[in-house]
Length: 544
Image 1 (cartoon, helix red, strand yellow):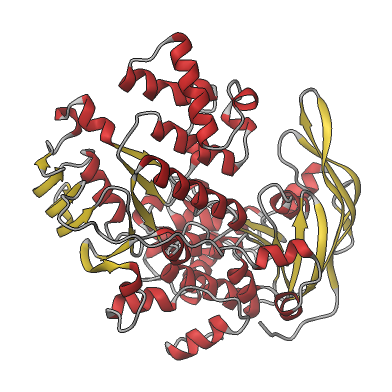
Image 2 (tube, rainbow, N blue to C red):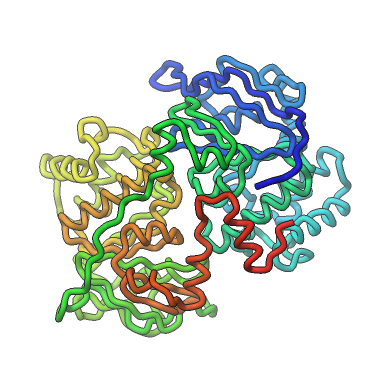
């Protein structure tokens, strides 16, 4: 990305050390990192989970999470030393001159207030604009960010707009006071590829328009290539290397950086449908609705034992709703769900314990899927107890076996709580919990979208190994086509509640494609700094 920059340094972080409180003592988690950011410049912070990306990004605001502290170093923002600035002055700085865009807009907006009321809060509080003027500015920003119906959408509540629209509304809110610096913390992680294009383009436009400096935190290397002028690579709280984006992509110096560039080498061997074999699960002509709103129409596909079906499509295409129908959480209004050729009761309440056991789920956000107050032994043990009737020593032996299966040492993890685990470890516990029921089929709902690429590859390799060992069938709900290429045997493409195309992976990724499938494939970011600009030009979208 090219732009005319001012040479003035806006943010200067020197020798930053940050400590976290653990086991009744302070442990250093960021080890003497330096960071210099000029006005109008975008710096990408990348690295795997635990690298310190978000911790450093928050420190740029003079902020540390509970249980952490800046122990040494300097954070100079436009001549202000934030490590010694009084808290009252810091509060007046945040939101006005430094803004933060969180990973999950849905979790960050107040569900009880309209978008525009939340947008106008900061400029009115800081007396930058009066409420009416701020509302008019919000509508202008919504228009710049290509939100639909910019003069009306602000008067909706957060649950009344899509995830991509919420993410753009949060970017608009961050711009409400025209800050000098914005911290973007994984703002497109949970978005489908077509929505991600819109959000990335909108963020780039707004940063360029107002010459705003930004720190862009992400684990997606192709995304950071589109957004950043400079990339800094981090590992376990240490700086690995820094360079301008083109240099970093073309000629990384350090082996760790090269390993990041080489991720997603994993490709499972594509399996073919067995001849003359009954499908494990069949979805036959199902329709479904939420209240009076029809959300699925005539959806059909088969899932065979030992194979992986990837279901892809934009947000709202019906992927997760189809999974809810298969599990009985949402009874179809018409059509049938078959297990080994026999029709399943539509409602899960009417299914036998053995029917319920056959299909288990692994959820997208392990943080919210695992009870933080329950130990790992209980999280994994409960389904083994419920479905298998295990107790006492037998139950402990089974939990140990499951921890071994997911490649976590039972001695180290049996008595831990989820809060003591990394994101990848939590997702492995989610896998073990699903396996505890001894299912034949597992639904994986966006399970790698919140993980960095190295951890995600490890999860995919683990699932592939478990599939071979246990003859499991998977339904992978995902918007990440790199994941589809890695693990799928067959692909089902959905749009607006309908299946528009399906078939073996090798056929689906070979042209010609259905027009919508082609749109999805062309929207996957590439490790080329010019990719987004070229794509927008081809689609006739103004990127200025």
